[in-house]
Length: 110
Image (cartoon, rainbow, N blue to C red; front, top):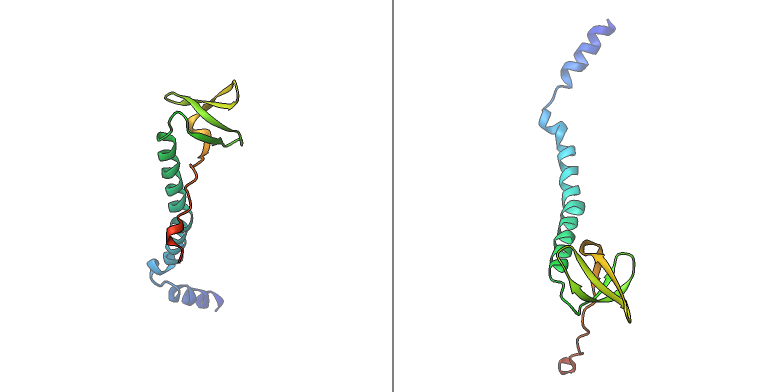
């Protein structure tokens, strides 16, 4: 008697297989838009920053060293961190390029 009841419950629970995968698909979509896509955007911006390095740019390494680029090569740049102190740094370890400060635009004030 118990076995026939178990078979009857199993047959009724068949359902649509797509509906069982729907939560998994939704989780993947949420992860893509919240985690994967922003990381790809940051990686693209970092690559553009590294490719656009020029002599004289002030940079910050991922280790926190600040300096001025004195020589640019293919995979490394030479950064002067103090007067007469030059360090070779791998391009991909540069965290940021310090921007030149822009003057305040006072003409927009009313």
